[in-house]
Length: 324
Image (cartoon, one colour):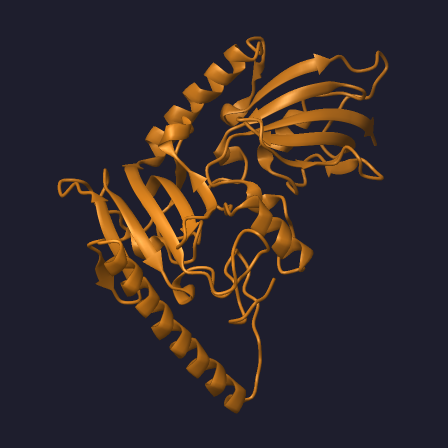
């Protein structure tokens, strides 16, 4: 697992300082690698009779064309399906329409979501189109490697389907309907509707003489955080101490604090939080293996937050252990 070009974009940048001679040598090596990989891609395309267009360092093949579609511009909310693979077809990461899952939603032009070059690639597309991109190291994982997943200096194939462009109002309305359906399907129809679209469902009453929770109280909680599809991104069930939340200090996401404020000592419950009261559009979504590897190398500070895709609705199962 290496950082050959000195940095890898995943919400942080890791810099490498060197003398000018070493820097010049590194630049020359990078340029040589780029030329070699471009030739490899050209050979691959020719050998497989693929009619691809070259745009700078990137090559792309139009799989499905839709000239009447809309082109994304800065700060548009877009939705995509994708598959990231090595040139030999080994899958690195994917989210496909055939898996009956919703597309990934994110703000175009602001996130390095799946690959650092993703927005640059999608900029050539229109809604309803599907492209296959062929990316040399300099335009993909920047020399990053991970055992059994990404080889050192991997050439990447990225198949992207640009599903649509959606407004924030439309997205919020869709999410509210999705939350209501989720509550009904899981037997939470008696959930309390709190402010800002947050819902709370009590699963265990608090102790009879348990302390109520008020502004300024520090509440000790155990919790598990999941996406609505059941994917767990965080928990503190095995931590030495419960997690402290001081009500009113706004040190956790708003929906989490709002849910806890409805509880009392000894109570257990489920809080369902819309994205606007959670992490909004700011989180990054990379393969879980890469997230964990970067965390292990101390290149990112958290291995949990980066697992949360943008615009995610969250569920927290919470137990109030104590109230001070």
